[in-house]
Length: 417
View 1 (cartoon, rainbow, N blue to C red):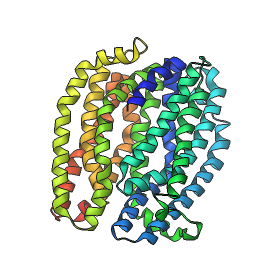
View 2 (cartoon, helix red, strand yellow; view 1 turned 120 degrees about the vertical axis):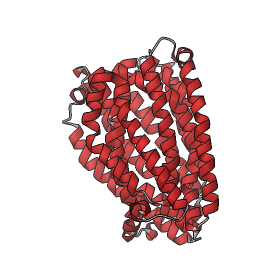
View 3 (cartoon, rainbow, N blue to C red; view 1 turned 90 degrees about the horizontal axis):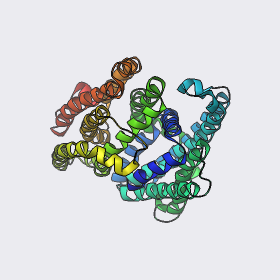
View 4 (cartoon, one colour; view 1 turned 180 degrees about the vertical axis):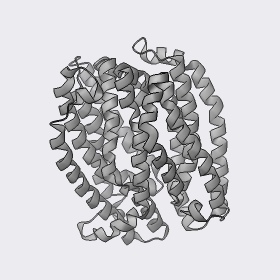
């Protein structure tokens, strides 16, 4: 988190606020290509945790090997489809920015899509480690990747001075992936040798088993892309790239608390898979109550963060970016409900009964783009944040009802799917 804060002012000084806004918008578009994952990593996370809970090491290795192989083939397919199309797309027109960026953006997109493919495949190891309930190790690898990216851009700032988007694409897309690949190879040869992938253990018939729940996660993730990852594009087209930077600065600041929440929540996904497999409802109920209490504690923290925000931005960025009062309060409210919804989402995801989530996100995805366009034109950043905030409010209400039913072993119909 500290690295992510330090890297923002350095990056803005390396390029400029407009280029940084373009970079953020293009980065959010990259998230769309994670649909080539088709929900495999989320499905793999649950299936691996189940196999481990049942002490079935061979089945766990089959899931590891099959997931790696399937994602690798899907990423090759992605490159075959996307790279030729990229050569004819006018990114300047899509993002509504100066046409002088057209050639540069085409090259940036190519670099990002190549590393994205490698990232999709290599993230299997991070998912395995989290499913093994060792989130510290997964986070350590992520921190090493971010540290290397920070060091690289710091060196470039003090040597070439005049940066461009191509440098950002390689540093932020490439360096963390390279670190993850190296760490995966090293740990599969040592600590995780027992789960190492093998060509001989690839069983494509197991893809259906992984996708039994993974297909639902795929629909949920794709729907979330329509709701959340279009925001930067809409803001860029309607309000300009500089406003994308303003929104993301506020989001990164308030997201600090959400990142702390995720540090706490991350282990509970696989822990709930393990506990639900063993029918340990008492422990699950106890953890559920404690996590709700933690969310209540976060509300006064958010209020304090809101009031000190102008001072923090000044200390953090100087006069490089101005963040309005309306942007701060809308992002703060959004963050409160984001954290609440994720408490229920993580626990329910571990249990695997995600049908209600699927319905909520798919329903909002169908209407999100026109509504966010309209609200952004009427009320700016607070307007566009209204839609995802409503999504999380619905998710929190229905998620809590469902989780209570599950923990009372009193589910039926849609609540049990």
